[in-house]
Image (cartoon, rainbow, N blue to C red; front, top):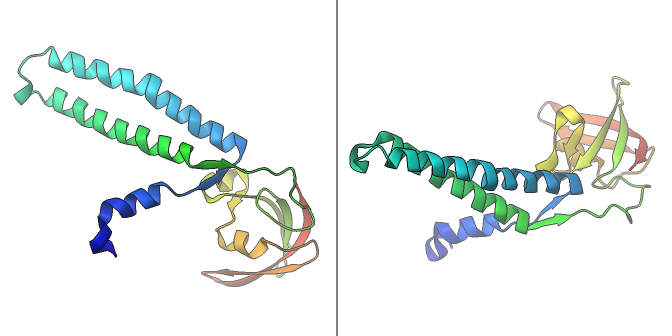
Length: 171
């Protein structure tokens, strides 16, 4: 199949993947795109203009570097624009709190150590362990999905299977 359609169509297919975001996560992406277009793009254009004013472009390393930076920036803008155009907002207004789903805030207890921790389950692209946001694609996230309060989730990790009791589920 790769030979028939080529690498380009595979890359286009991967780029057009639908991703789910919270309103905050999507706003962050849009803010990044805005910054790339309104701050970085004019800055690189200015660098190209200044380098062009220095004379012979065939031996002008500054010009070459600025043009390369422009190409990289335009690729970032294009990719981010594609991600935003394929982004879908997660509507948590109708999600049932009796089970763990994406955007659930889950308080769990490690059965073997008794340690309790609280996580928010988010889409993979919004995971941030420092903010206690874990991906639904992570081992813990996968193990918790669909569980109810009081259930024991068996989570398969590289270090072995761990058990977590669901203490509380909220939004």
